[in-house]
Image (cartoon, rainbow, N blue to C red):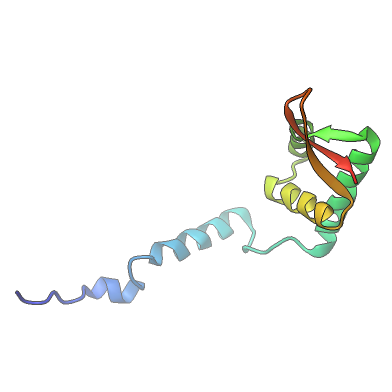
Length: 108
């Protein structure tokens, strides 16, 4: 059985996964973002806001925190990173509240 020759279009475009880089470039053009991670000052600012919100209420459920972030236009990934950072620093603890049957974030 004779071997198939590579299609010239495949070698020119970069292979089977070439469409992934094209989609990323189109998304960057559409949103104006170049795949950058948020700066440390932006994350620190969000951490401070989240921490002050938790301090003000004592404990806050995940759904209330999510709706707060949604109203403010905060991306879920940024909120999650800020919460993870606060937990790693030992400022916030995550627990389960049986009464509300939901995750709760409290001061450590």
